[in-house]
Each structure stands twice: as structure tokens, then as C-alpha cells.
Length: 358
Image (cartoon, rainbow, N blue to C red):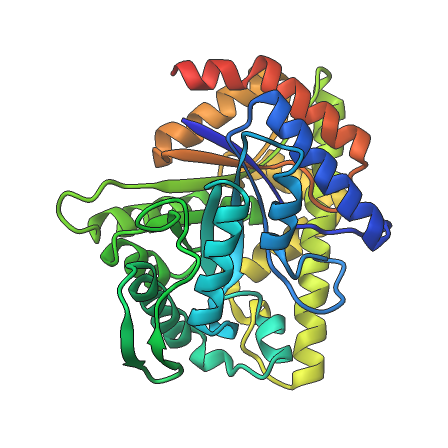
């Protein structure tokens, strides 16, 4: 099993420069510790939820110091990018990282779509059209003309060609909507499931099933399962740190969603997606997060505990979902870098080797 790390790039209580320094340090350390990949999201505009408008650029920089680890965009917001420009940037980043790019694609945060004038009702058809065009471009043929509902291009062939052929692996994000999971399966690409957002285990499992049921004959499943994690030698410390991290991340999601709603006057967004809204509200304070995880485990996919406890809980999720890859959200919210690094080290030394043998 491939095991990677994820950060939303949230930075409550930290400067933008500080969070960039910390994430680059995390990537370098993850490379040294033997993690397989590192992932962060794409977001535009000043929100403490994320300070990451250019993850591909971050990865090109990180690749100069981290020589082995792979890089997952988790996610690029397809509805706001012209497919020609996005494909070209991905290909160039693949060349500059020596073939280590993994491409996570999604619809994007609702408030970001609103900022750039994208109608939320169009996000799903834009998302699907954009990905189909990306694949058409990546297949490498000269395209005289291609026209869709939202984009068109002509007289184009991708340059540079990516190192990974026919193109870097693609993963479609599906948090709560079966349409995205169905689409990922039908086009034969991978699936990213961000279970670390408090999404109920039952829903995550159902989406994984929908994805696999829609895969073309002969195409193998490739699910990246996201789980919130904090490991420490002392259980109480792990729970305390994990609750702080998850709560501060849920809080910035909830506040960003409410701000987007108040400025736009529209209702489309996390505030009207019941599963996401319920999760953010129940987890937005450390004590609430702690009580919810204790009361609803394993339904809330948060793993906080000693190495033995972490291994047991993660093993449960692996048995339940059977993902091909595991993505651990270890640096969310306002957790200090010292605590993030300690958890990364402990997991890599005492949990990861056992997981890989199973």
C-alpha cells in the first residue's frame, strides 16, 4: 500500500510565509522518512483555509530538495481552468519533477468558484467536460479542433510531453456526491476520497462501491483514501492534538462557507450540503470534535492515538474500504509544526512498516 500525507494549507495564527516554510519542511522530511507522496490543495483568495494557489509550482520547488517522493494535487479546481493551459502546466511540472506528478482533480471549493464568476450550477458539467478534454489533450495527438459547451481549442498538440506516459495518473475527487464517483469510474481514472473532512464512513464506503461498479471491464481500482491522523506515544496527547487540528480546520471551512454565502446571496455551497455542513458544525471546536469522535467512532474517520491504536483503527478503515493508497491529513488547522513533525516521525517509524507488510 502506498502511504502519503496531506495538508489543506490552513494557517490560522500563522503568517503566509511561515506556512510555506513549514510545508516545504514537511515535504522534505516526508521524503526522508519514506512516505510515498505528498498532497495539498489549490485555492484562490485570502482565506485561512488555504494559502495555496499554485501547488504545481510548490512541487517544482520541493522537488529540488526532495528527490524521491511523488506529488499529488489534491485538488486542482477543473471548472476554473482552460484544459489547454491546465494540461500544459501539468506536463511541464511533470518534466521539472522528473515524472513525479499525480493529478488530483475536482470541482473546487464553492466560494472559490463564486469569486471567479463560475455559476455553481455549472460546476459539475464544467468539471466533466474539462476532464474529458484534458484526457484528449494528454493522449498526445494533434487536435485540429475541439469544441464543447464551455471550452474550445484548435491547432494544438501538448508541449512539453510529460515524462509519465501516456500522462500522469489522474484522480477524481468525490467527497459526498455519487455523480463524481460514477464519473471517475466510467472514465477509468482513480478516485480521491477526503474522509478526513468528517464525512461519515458509510457514505465513503458507498462512494467507493459506486466507483468500482462503474469501472470499465479490465480496469483496476485506484482509490486514495484520506483519513485524519495524529499519532503520539501518549494517547491523551494524541487526542488533544488531533481534536485541535481537526476542529480548527472544520472551523475555517464553516466560516469560509458562511462568508461566501453572505457576500454572494446564493445558497449553493457547503452550507447547503447536509453531510458537509453537519460535519463542520459538530467538529468546529476542539471539545466538540473530541466528543464527536469518541461517540461516533469509527464513523468519523479520525485516527488519534498511540502507534498501536493508530494501526488498529487504520486497519479497520483499510479492511472496510480496501483503498489502494492511504492519505493521512497530519497538518491541519493550527497545529504547531513541532507536533506535526513528531507525528510524522512516529507514524513512519512504528506504524507505516507494519501497514506495508499487511
